[in-house]
Length: 529
Image (cartoon, rainbow, N blue to C red; front, top):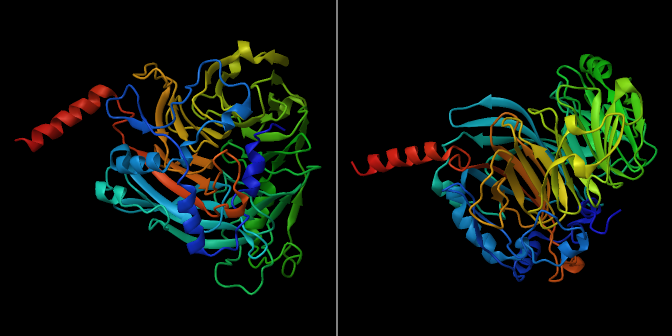
C-alpha cells in the first residue's frame, strides 16, 4: 500500500468528533478555513472560461514520481480567499449549481432513474450513504433531486447558495439501515430499483429499493435492514471495487478486494424471483426475515485470479457482462474475459508509478480506458494498442498522461454523452473536466486538454458521477475534514459531515467559440436596440 493511499483516509475521515453538536462543528469548520493558501486564475482557450487552482510548481509531462512530495504542497482547500473568490464567479461559471451540507460523512453517491419531468426541472432519484459512529446506524439513503433544466436558473439563485445549509432541491424519500458503513454503492443498470453496496466485509449486499422497509421515522430499533441478496465469494474484505454490468437486460455485478480476486455474479434469475414474490418487511440481517422470506445467497459465476495486491477498482466493457478491467495496488491494469477463462487476457504492468486507484471504460469510444493513481496522474489507454495474451509495458501503450492534479486520484469517469470528455477528482479537492479533442491552452501551466475545474468542495472529493439522463450535469461528494498546516489530520477537531453538490457548467465553456460569440453578439444587439 502506498504512503498516500486515499482509500484508507475515506474510512476514517470526519469521525473523531461525530458526537459533537452542530454549532461547535460549524465553528471548527470556520476555524479550519483560516489556513494559509493561494489563489490565482487560469484561463483556457475558451474566451469565457475562468477557473481557479494552484500554480505552485505546475506539473510537467514527466509527472511526480514520489507521492509524498505532493503532501508538502499548499492545498487550495485550505485557502478561504480562493474559495470566496470562486463563490463570486458561480453565476458565470455554472448554468445550475446547488450545495447540500450533510450532518454525517458519506463515501458514495449515485444517480437513479428519472421519476418525473416538470416544466422547469426534472425529478430524479439518487442514492448516497451515511457513515456514522456507534450512536446511530449506518444508512443507505434514497432521495430525489430537483434537477433544474438548462438555462432556467437565475444568476441570483446561483450566487445565494449557503455552503453550510441543506439544499432546497434535495428530498429524502427512504432510509435503509445498513449493516456496516457503505464504502461504495452501484445501481443495477438493467433493474433500476436494485442497488449493490460494499462495506468492510467479504460480502456484497444487494437491495430492492422499492420493497425495503423505510426507517427514516424514529425507529426504536437500530437493527439493520436485511439485504435481498448477499453475494459471496471473497476470502477477505472487498471494500471499494464494485461495478454493474453494462449489457442491456442483463443483471450482473463484479467486485474486487484485498484477497486479490475479481468475482463476477449473475443476478437475473434471483432478481426475477424476488421481484415476483416481494419481500417487504425485512428488518435485521440476523432475523432470518419474516415468515418464509429470507435473504438469498449467491456464489460467483466466475472468479478471476492474477493480481498480486489489493484490487482498488473494476469496470465492465460497454455493452458487456463478460469483459472486465481491474486495477490495484500492484500498479497493474488487467483485462478479463469470462469466455476465455479465469486468467488475464491482457496485463499492463506498472500502468502507473504507484497504486492505481480508479479505472473507467468509455461507454462511447469502447476501446478507451481511463485510469487514476496515487501519484496524481490520469492516463488514457487504447485497448487496441495493448498486446493480447500477455504483458506489455505501459510506456508503449498509454495514449496520454495528464499531471495537473496535485494529490492522489480517487475517482475518474467518462462522460456518458460526449466522446472524449471525462472527469477526474481526488484528495486535492479539484474535479477536473477534460476534453481529448482540445489541443490549445492560453496558459503554459494548464494542459491543453483541461476544459474546466470545479473547485466548490473544500476537502477531498471522494466520489462523483455524470448524470446519465442530463448532459453535462454532475453530482459530486466530499467529506468536510480539516487538515493541519503541515498537511496532517487535525484529530482533535476533525470536521464531521460532508458536502454533496449538483452542478452543470455554463454551456458557453464547451460550445464552439464561434457559436458562443455569435450568441453574445445577438444579445448585445437586443440590449442596444
